[in-house]
Length: 255
Image (cartoon, rainbow, N blue to C red; front, side):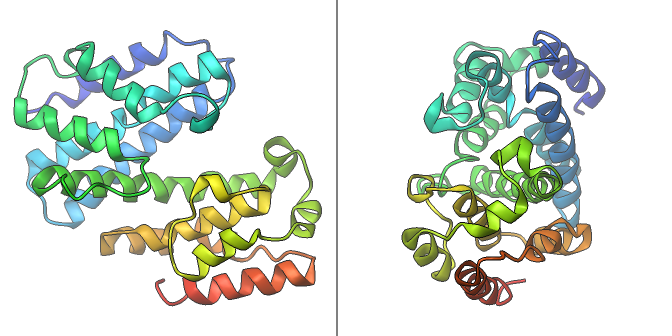
């Protein structure tokens, strides 16, 4: 049986290596805690075994382990401007062997599931070569991560100046870039490289809804209400409002 208390204590020891005054450290600690709870909750709702529920919990706790070093080195969470936090996490945990700080006893199948799920949790899609239980867990962490992303983005609406360096009124004056709008209307995730402004990133967040795998995940999205707060945002720019309304029509087809 997994000693979740020991894993939790090891995680807190790792986070304590970083200056809590570094922007993002405490928010990522909170995010990791929330996502690990969501992973366990979703695994239970899906009828997974108790062992797999515990493994899902650990995956949620460790999926963003690379974010802390990213924040310390680069003071940003934008991967293309700094480093791929998932690949760093895999390097730290599995290539450097620090997974043993959290799970002292080697279990090759379990460790490989964690490695693959962490590696692909932030990718545009999980590669087809990732199959079986590893794929199940990779898709689970992606769902749980996005559920909490909506909480984070809903908070951005309360403090837009701190995130986008502009008011909501100014955000609503922007227009959605053509490539972003095209991907959104195809009910796809929006590629980061086509996003040009803050409204593009906001639209990209909304489009995360198109990438959910498990029905209990969407049920949690509805239950929490953060996503509805995002949907309630209406730009003041008539052109932007029309663009976003078209995207919302597609969203209402899936939620």
